[in-house]
Amino acid sequence: MDSLSAEEIRKHRGTLKEPGTNSPYRDRSVAENLDLFRRMRAGEFPDGAHILRAKIDMASPNVVLRDPAIYRIKHVHHHRTGDAWCIYPMYDFAHCLSDSIEGVTHSICTLEFENNRPLYDWILDELGVFHPQQIEFARLNITNTVLSKRKLIQLLTEGITTGWDDPRMPTLSGIRRRGYTPAALRDFCERIGVARCDNMVEFALLEHCVREDLNASAPRAMAVLNPLKVVIENYPQDQVDEFDFPWHPEADMGSRKVPFSKVLFIEQDDFREVPPKGYHRLYPGNEVRLRYSYYITCTDVLKDEAGNVSELRCTYDPESRGGSSPDGRKVKGTLHWVSAAHALDAEVRLYDQLFTKPNPGAEEDFTSCINPDSLTVVRGKLEPALANVEPGWHCQFERLGYFCADEKDTKPGAPVFNRTATLRDTWGKIEKKQGGR
Image 1 (spheres, rainbow, N blue to C red):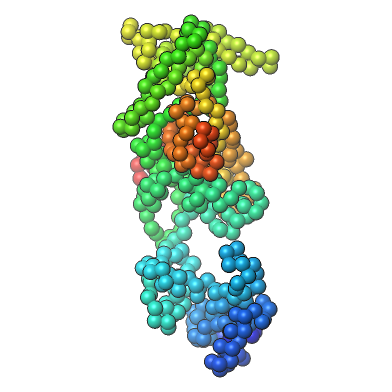
Image 2: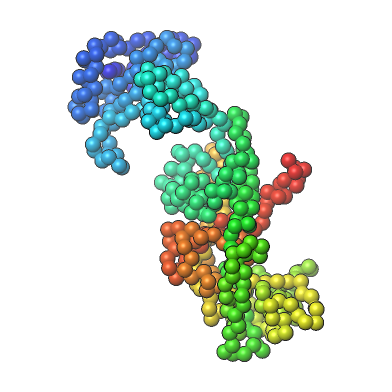
C-alpha cells in the first residue's frame, strides 16, 4: 500500500534511461498493507490518499513493471453498482484476470498493449491461474469515420449523434441498427485480414461487402421517397388491379400482391419536363414501363403557383399488362411506383457518412468535418405489404438502395426504415482503377 501522491509516484518511477527508486512505503509489513487495504475498501480514505501497487522491480528496463498501480480509491457513483464500491482495479490488473476468469484463450489487442504484455503475464503467473495468450495487431482504421472511444464519446456529449446505437456510429449496436449483417462484417474482416502495420481501409469496401450480402439475401419492395403524383386518365376510376410481385428476382422467397389504381406515385427524379440527352425515364410524349404492370405515356404536366411540377397526366396501354406489349415494341425506361390509394406513409431515414474527409482523426478539430447531410429524414410512400414488417427486417427498395426496419422505432402498421447502403457501388470503381487488386 503506497501513500505517495500521484506526482511523487511519477518522479519515483524514473525514465526509460534511468531506473526508478523505491517508495518509502515499499517495505510496509503484510499486516499493515492488509489493514490499510481493508480500510481503503471500507471508504475511510479520500481519493488519492493511498494506492495499491504490485511489488515487482523499480529497476526494470520496462517502466510498466516498476511497481504498477493495481487498485485505487474512487468515490464516485457507479452506473451499475451505485455506491457499493469506492475502490476500483486498474485496467492492467482487471484485463488479464477478466480474460482468465472468462476462459479467453487468445486475448487480441491493438499494438499499444504490446509493452504491457509482460505485466499481463506476470499477474497471471504470480496468481497461478489460467493463462490466456495476448496477441497484438494493428488498429483498424476506416475512411470517413473515427474509432477512438474518446472521439465517439465527444460525438455523444456534443449531441452530434443520438446514442451509442445511432446508425452513423461505428459501434456494433450502431451498424446493426443501420442494417449491416453479421455475414457482411465477417466477409469484410476476411478481406482486410490481420496486420501489424497501421493501415486505412476504404469505407467503400465495407459497403461493398454489405451490398453483396444483401443483394443475395434481401427481399425487394417498392417505395417512393420523393413522390410525384401521376393520374392515368384512361384507367377506370374505381378499378384496382393486383399484380403478383416476387420478393426476389432470383432466390425463391415467394411473392406478394401489389395493388395498381388510377392514381400513382413515382419518384420526382424519374420525370423531366425537358429531358437531357440519353434520358430514358418519363417526359412529355415518352412511354415508359411501370415495374411488372403497364406501359404509360406522359400527356400533360400540371404545375403549382411557384411553377413546380405537381402532377402528371398519363395514359396507359391495357394490352401491356405485366410489362410487355403484344406488338413487341420496346421501351427503355422502367420505373418503380406505388398506388396512391393503398400507399403506406412511413418515415425513412437516409443515412450517409458522418464525415466529409477520409481521415477526420488527423484534423486539428475532427468535428469540423462533420457531414451536415449525414442524416436526411423523409416521409415516403411504401407498398402496403410493408405495413407489419418486423424490426430489423432487411429489404431493397427497388432502384433506391438497401434498407432495414429500425429496431427501436418500428411499430405494427408504422414502420420506420433506415437506409443501410445505396445501390451505387463505389468500391467496384476503386477496384477497377487498381486493376482488380
